[in-house]
Length: 107
Image 1 (tube, helix red, strand yellow):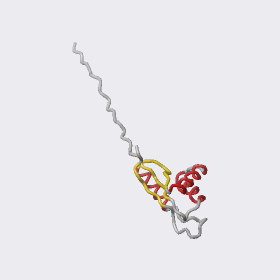
Image 2: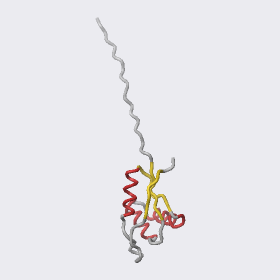
Image 3: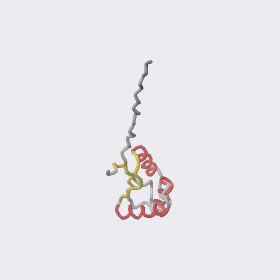
Image 4: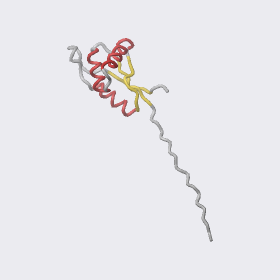
């Protein structure tokens, strides 16, 4: 009688590589109202009004604020949505959207 011994197979363990994080940074200017910033952040990022107000205060005080941290492709999409949101209807002299940039998030 012959017996065969089967050796257990090693499971292939795949490590999922995480994509590096990127910040979407909103830049301040004098041509957009708090109302505009709050509305834009609500529509683009689904931030609640209270968070939008805090972010509007910070961008006004410091000149820039991180509004989201995500992977590069999504960060670029959100930056583009900010830059294509359109002019502030509350400020007649406003001619266009706010500016935003994408930068690597610090680890």
